[in-house]
Amino acid sequence: MALTSSLFRSPLAKYTTVLSQPIRLQSTFRGRSNNARALIPTWNDYFKLRKKRRMYEVASYLPSTVVPAAGTASYFFQMQIDPFTKILGMDPIMAAAVATISAGFGGFLLGPVVGNTLFKLMNRRHGTAMDLRDKEFYNHIKKNRADARLNSVRNPVPDYYGEKIQSVHDYRAWLRKQREFYRKGVFGGDMKGLED
Picture 1: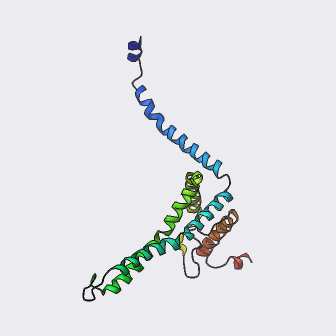
Picture 2: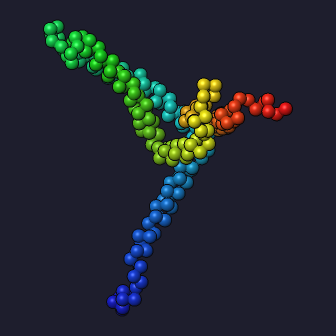
């Protein structure tokens, strides 16, 4: 009986599992999106977590700058320096100062990465939900921001990436500024004179 059922099976039967995979992936993504909405139910909750993440990033600037600079300086302080040799074509003391400042600057640039990592470790439950909400928020920003080609000295672009938005109220104010920027760029100047 099994032999006859395999003979009469449709030639497309083996492809049905392949065709059903995108639907499964899409439903999994929707499930993750719904899970993100359950963990972060409102946009104000998202903005509070975003502000908290920014605090972690700002707080990590100091240690991530001081630790590499102090480590590099302590290495050069313990090193015996021959005053007649050159390091990379510079005086050894000058090379030590440049290396120490470079290590501190590199640590300063890595500060937000360290802060974001600490935030994700301390808030593991919200990690994927924050990533999904970030993606959704930046899609809103890309869709609603004004064209930067209208930029001029008298009409600078207002907060192009939406970094200053910390609440729904700020987002609405940002939308108004984008419309005002567009109106000034296209029509030039204020609209108050045109209302008469």
